[in-house]
Image 1 (spheres, one colour):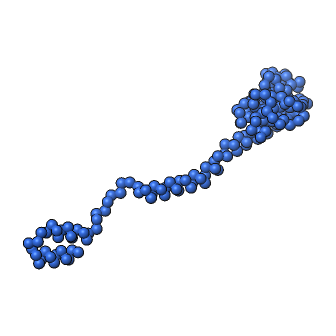
Image 2 (spheres, helix red, strand yellow):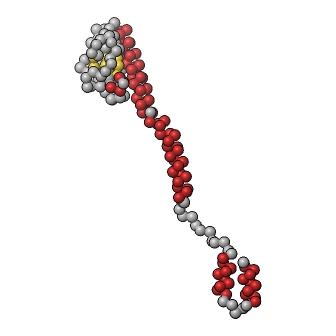
Length: 180
């Protein structure tokens, strides 16, 4: 287009040059615009990518808390069972529930299972520094089972924590989620 405008300028010097300048500008590329924002398409692509990633990862994390509770519960049960077994070897019997705890596991004991200060008179234990908690309810309370010698099938009382059988030394969680 530029060569036509030059031709007309040469042939008709009296012609209004503003018209020729406008015609000349039609053939030129528009100056590049500065990009200050994202386009709708770019935003939609990002939203779709985030949705796909969330859909793939969120289900994996939902079960993590339950898995951690179950793992902690199994660990705490193992620790309690091992220390109750060690107590039995030292005392030829199992610890008994006193109040809502098994103090013979967290205190020094004599051969009869009586608790007292560590020393020559109370040479056994403590078997645990503190009672492990049930991770489902955060309780360390111990409740006797309803039927000795049988595995519990439901929660006993409202203390949470653990169910303990003094005749067999068996211990179970005392929480409804365990019995589902």
